[in-house]
Image 1 (cartoon, rainbow, N blue to C red):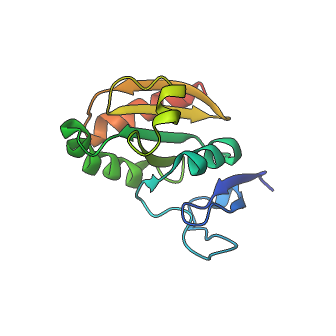
Image 2: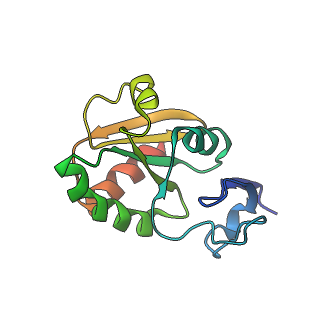
Image 3: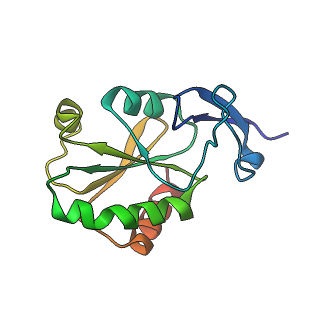
Length: 147
């Protein structure tokens, strides 16, 4: 039997243990009963980001963005399309640099949109600038091979 993978619920932040071979079977949260993967990015505050980062057994791909940023708004539907393609292999999330300026400073997010990929609680890759969904998927897939 495959080792279970920890998956943090995008709704209630409960840590769930899901058998690795069942990630694609539309698993539900043991606490709130919502789907663990919905094919769209989770919106995370600084506190929620830290919980997902420290407890997720799958890579976490984060779009750091701001509401005033035109390229960020342009990339939003592309990032959502990438979520549909990349889940459940990784969790996609959005963090507003306006709402989490301390986190953005700590991670040295100097330009947005900024994609940062985390695995095992550590940043493994980052990419600045707006990208189409296909490019996001290809970049994230390549970056997780060595992670």
